[in-house]
Image (cartoon, rainbow, N blue to C red; front, side, top):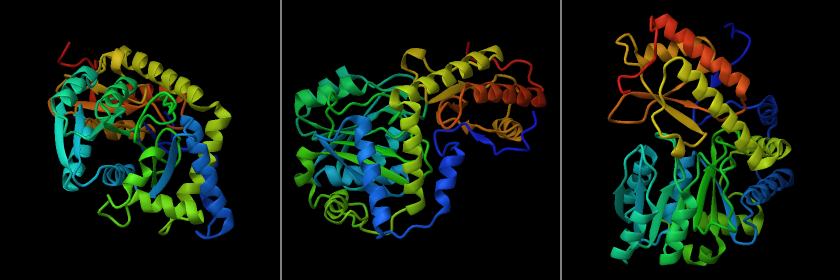
Length: 376
């Protein structure tokens, strides 16, 4: 496969492969207080609210930094310092959410689920019934440690029934999996520029329920990550409090325009689902087995068991696939050896077919006839 004429395609959960239009949008410099840039900020905020039909119920607050910055900012802003957070844990990013919550001094309880299973709304219901001190629940919508699609609507319904706040990390699901603020009750929902909107990394954003905004004042112990202050200042001036990621924002503005042209969330999900099906079918022909049951697999990133062949070595496998134009992702599981392949970004089923071919060439280079795992 001759890939000398193109950049490697990123089969990761972010950063992602972006379009030329998105890249070109970053070639202009912007003044952060200039009226043109203020207009871009306003347009992006409106467009983000459009995606979740959230204009009536939520405000959106952008924040400089990676998605994790925004998760930390959301927890610190929404949860009072005497609050008690329950984290639903079925993967690496849940554990990260629990760690940052504890580091901010909030009381934290973790309820663990297997990495191959979705979190349980029934278990959550029992926990909230048993412990009235819990004020907020944190869940990851798409836990990309393994690729699990967690049941957002059911979890939100349980939290609403108990009158507890819900903070949703929708980093790898927003703009692909359906999220409708008219149906799903949440206090905060977090996503980022470099995921399913297919922008570049460097900016997160948090949807905050309007009913809780006034109660967020003074919660955060951080100056830079206080979303309430960011919201108040942005509403008053249209500007960011501190130097904004100008090029990232205008790239996101362009990426959103392409998202809208494609047909929005449903069209993007359809493309990703086709990518997923193409990937899984092609990899099965090589002997690979996905880690998850298809019933809980999100079409975002797929975890595969490593081949049982003793000649398999992820680093060599990775480099061989990269030489043929595709960047894979290491596994996040602790008990068994895996690797991950993303289905998102500015790619379609043709690129996924090429990716499978690149994997086949990598296996051949390592002398592996079948990618069948040790676990049948």
